Amino acid sequence: MTRLIEFVIALALVLALFLVIGLVLPSSRQLQESIETNRRMTIVFDTLNNVRRLKDWNPLIPGAANELSYSGGEDNTGVGAKVDFNSANAAWGQGSWEIVESERPAPTGGPGKIVYAIVDKRMGTDKRSTFALEPSGKNNRNVKVTQSYEVSYGFNLIGRYAGMYVSRHVGDAVKAGLGKLSNMLATVPNIDYREAGSTLTDLKIVDVPAEDLLVVNAGNIDRNNDAIKASIKSNQEWIKRVMDANGLVAAGPLRIITTDFGTEKYAFDVAQPVRKGSAAPKADAAADAAPVTPPAAPVASTGELKVTIPSGAPVEYVRTQARKSAYGSYTGYMSQLDNQRNALRAWAVTAGHEVVDRPYESWKSGVDGAFLEDGKFDVYWAVKQ
Image 1 (cartoon, rainbow, N blue to C red):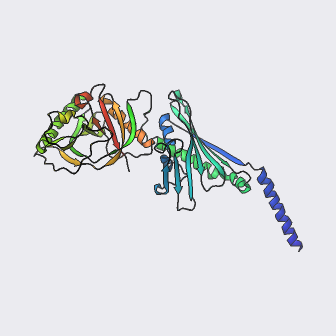
Image 2: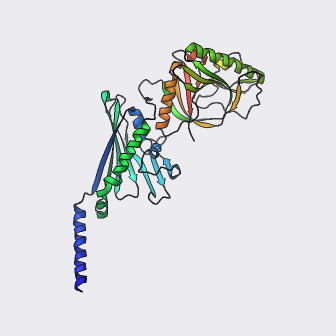
Image 3: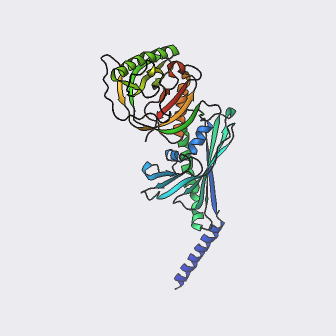
């Protein structure tokens, strides 16, 4: 009996000590980690402001795509954008990250902020992760990213004890995640596609229907305007012969598909969208055909054509499949197209899309007009579906 009383007293003392210490422990915890990147502020902000990119660097959510679903925001960006996870792995279970605040940096420079509300199995409530962005480094060319994590335990004493280890259980993940974020950002072309006066506009994801193309591989051409122009016009003549032989007409502007844009050589294909026509096209239709539909909605082919290629013609008939593509409209010199392609890719990947295949441009001003300062182009780069 004495031993039982001693045990009860000892247990009561332990419980009292547990309660006293628990009440003394903080009712909330906060931690933060920082990195610095040389990517443009636009790239950093857009990456963090899109919930589709979280799985690529954030260890605090499961990385399997089939366990994630997206909703809200504009193309899953900004306030209201949310990623829900539902994992068969009991360690993850169900949860979500949702953007509840989003402050884009001013065009003239300055700080930015994105705040996520978090729901997961970890102990605590009112969880927030805030990403504070501020210019840093020489001439403010870099961006300092500070991620903070906050959690409240209230009067949940077990939670308060769990908070003693939040710096290890969550802090280590935050630190590792920022390292992965830095490495991921380094793969994005360092171009500010939102800067004032940008000539690449109307950035979006569009649906491109199936099309019929006549294509010539131009090979490696010297990177000067005269050589490129001569190659394109020569290959257009071959395309025109095939069009005439098959009763085809242009279904849109000339298209240049880039294989490699090197320091001295430019490797590309010349392509012409075509369709069956009741009359042969005019002599320069392949060169300067005007688009017959808005540029974001190319003409859909009704079915695969039967095309006969004359002997010796270096022309290939290609039937493309319907696909989604990153799209932008560009006005300027043809020589600046490589920068526009990289800007389009930068925008696409920060928005959570993976570019695939080769990029191409529709030359809406024709060949000669493309080499003037007001050349007009629609720039496309297919994205993985």
